[in-house]
Length: 301
Image 1: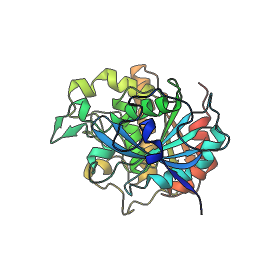
Image 2: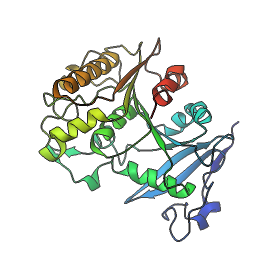
Image 3: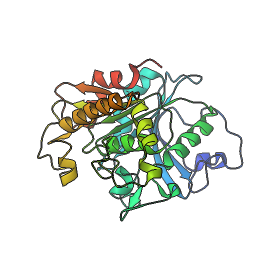
Image 4: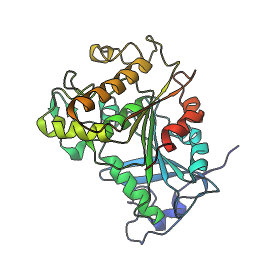
């Protein structure tokens, strides 16, 4: 049985125990995230968030990045943390897997980022997306590395989250990977949000934001066997169906459209499409496939 290290009372003096805010009243020091498997309870603004971690034995304390993984509808971050262990060992980094529970972050509040509600834009302070920069800052403070690089990796509903996150929050990951999302944010105003930029106020859906979205270091990572139009968790709302019959087709269509729009406008498109041959809608298999390493690490800075 694998040993899981839980940061609770033992780290009370370091400010990492619930409900005290991490780092409050003490100076950040290195290596507060323990070796092996662990858990943190962090306060991010008004929210307390449970975070699952993994620190490999070969972690590089000077250059090792954080690999932020985002779960799908099953709300099982510990499983994605476990599935990402080999990736962490390859990049000599740490895995950070937050839990967005159904009670506080149902449906649109998670996968759609809580950007819109009842057809109206919500203030940025209420976006679920806004918790991610706080989480990055918190982990950097815990590790004592203000410039610690980071990757974003989401699968299924987490892939939706990562893709839309990159459109609305100013982040600079080494790479953002959206794996097997059931619906995507298409770079068009022909579809309403969350499927496109239509029906958004100018402050959220204007030309500058669309241009910046296409310039993001975003990789659509797909399993070539994730092509079941009747998958029980597939979004089959009318606007999702307009994106394609299944996840693989929707990702390919989004990528094709992104390049087309960028060419027509003279913009830069930094999106990539990476496919895992023969893999269906299976998170651990997607993360364990060699193509996941291509999606995350095989792009020069």
